[in-house]
Length: 264
Length: 131
Length: 146
Ligand code: SF4
Ligand code: SF4
Ligand code: FES
Image 1 (cartoon, protein in one colour):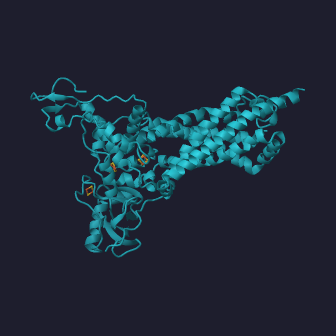
Image 2 (cartoon, helix red, strand yellow):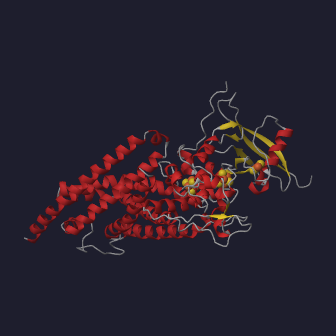
Image 3 (cartoon, protein in one colour):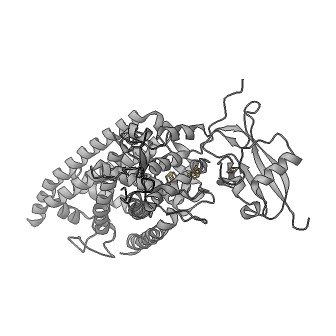
């Protein structure tokens, strides 16, 4: 076709069952304008090497499966057009800071583990009221915006791969879990500050972020983890001086329409 | 210890150092550009006359001691932070904390002793020069 | 039995130093560390050297200062001065950010995403420029004056 370009894809290959060291394979891909890196990988699998492994599912930036290192930047393969990255050459490796399962598939287990540790769910002091609620916890649109942005995280791990603290400290919680801690803390319905405090306020915790801000640069969903972390630090600091107060949403008895009281 | 406690002190000493070390740098290294605090302006700030002139003042002694304390804390906590973020440090947390604490306190005592002792020396020195 | 997975591909210290195609702030992170380490090393020596004024007296002090005013040490003095200027000014930026004053509030993300990095960028630029000016003055004072 007229505007196809031949672009070499250099791809890191590693099979833990047979290899001791990774190697790089290069394949020539016929690139059309608008084609994504993910489509390039499909073409390689179809035409050149059926054993190439990577992870994807939604192919539209929703599932968070296809995070990889494309020309030095951690990003989603499905969300990245080849010609936007480079018209000359593409280099792909699995996300750094994670072990490799195979080829481009990173093992994100450590991130999910840390994510679980920060208790990523709404915590209420009164769990009975929470589980058998007789109404709703009214939240204003302004209160929604306080955490909405951070709730868009798709757990792709790009931020963890880009973080310089993560690069040397395996125990560091990392931008994804820390941002999620703030996502719940910023939620007016949540009362879990004290439950999360011991997890966040320890060595390799919240304050091991030194604002390299790389996480926010690479995040494909605009989550801005670096912002969430700094706002969490501010709350933690206020708490240190016993100055932290949070107004929580009250339960509004269900009357068929939102109560007039603003709930905060 | 809560990580935030250590970090808050790091932040406070950092702010204090901006002022203290800023003053120190202006006196010692910007004497020609700004030129404040130099008691004998015809000499360089590191010349003995100026050093003793500063050292004999009790306020300067306190300045040095507070300065020393802040700088040591900031340096020790900062170094510890960097070291704990490496594999070696993460696996030897206690060792690193111990080294940093001992070094910090040791140097604080040493430096404080020097600042206190120097008050007498420079007062004596001044008398010799005056007489 | 599959053998143990390779190393966990953590980038290690390289991850601090190699910013790759990435942002200015990441280099600031690394520069802040390097200047910090440099200042600590200097500071430890500095305590020992300056204490000679109390334990060694005038002669030891003056001969030490004589040695230290030679060329190599002047460069060292300049590097320490520059390190302090950078570390101090970037430190102000970091304090503003970490206390949540320079990152902005939560917003509704709309593509192309605006992040806190853009928000604090002006502060980063001002801090870098101010550090450069101070370093110039210091350099003049250390090398050219007198
Ligand atoms: S914060 Fe962004 S980069 Fe990190 S896991 Fe979530 S979506 Fe991915
Ligand atoms: S801002 Fe913090 S979490 Fe994000 S990349 Fe930098 S150090 Fe890591
Ligand atoms: S395939 Fe789902 S995010 Fe890329």
